[in-house]
Image (tube, rainbow, N blue to C red):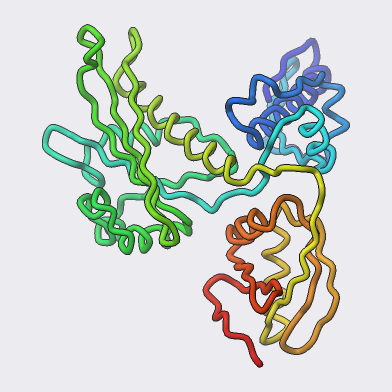
Length: 336
């Protein structure tokens, strides 16, 4: 925030109120589909306070009439959910694992990924990063990346190589975003960017989407590329939200068995569960040396709960008519 008034104290008061309203709007946009942003509830600065759980201040600077700071807000989940449901808006809460974006550019010399110059990669670096439910990761392009994946492997969709590189960045999926800039057939000398974005995951078939944008008047090519990168990012964000929209307001309860080899395993699972936003409460029913039985109180469907748990490296599977929770990668073989 950056506020100016007759005194620093007044500037601080105005900045804090405005900051809460800005943060609340960002929160609502983060949870909802882009097509619904025009219908988001608009609250006065004073009304936003009812939804704030707490906030903190950092990098605070003042002068005689000016106040600058970074504000970090936390909001009340139930109140926010009720507000969105009252406005008949669907929303998602589950954050995705990072998605690794590989910007492949069609240059005159051929396909480039790690080479310089790569204006498509530069465009991704220039775009304003938005803190949404999908965090995008760009590769460093260092020697380890170059050895892990070639541009041909990326374009060909070598899932093994892509997955290995994604592991380095702790990403769940990889997106190969190919871009080519050429003349716009409907514009007089204007440029056009053609994009194909393919999402790769070891557990599902690749998904490809094609996008194209014409150059606007007085728009530089790099700005056109940045606009294309924003469109790809928005598409990934909206796609994730659509898969995880919470329908209905009723909470569910899942009785779950958690196999453990000791207390450390259980503490590790508990720590991961705290990061799963759709889990409202954890009720321990029974604890033994090799198993913990719990009731998970959650919002959404069972499939959405599985997806949300997966983002925290927890796998919820159905075995012998009961739910069993494993850390991802753990053997599903249970003791008899």
